[in-house]
Image (tube, rainbow, N blue to C red):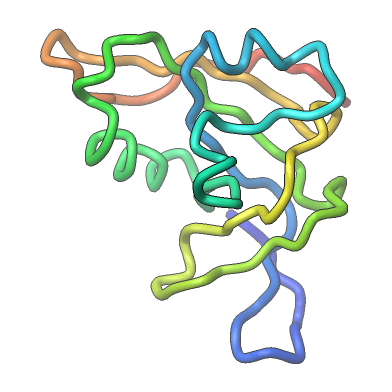
Length: 131
């Protein structure tokens, strides 16, 4: 469960760990560099994340079931980031990261599991990267 610090604004500031879905080719191309940016980052200006793995299945199945590429879940330590992170909408389950993610902030990678029809069904045990 994500811990949240008290904020002076109306919404709490996300802290702790968050989860991001990435096509394997996008992650593999950037994992050895300093930063990771999702494919839509230039157009959207932020990185979509969720507060837990179960919540990550919601956008995965809403937007990516027709994309047949393999996917991974990146666990991101928000406390390592220098970029602004905030919840932009209710419910407070989708933190947005307003900047590239330093690859050192990615602590685990989990393969996404999918059914034959492309639906995301869960994630494998994590591969620890940091810590």
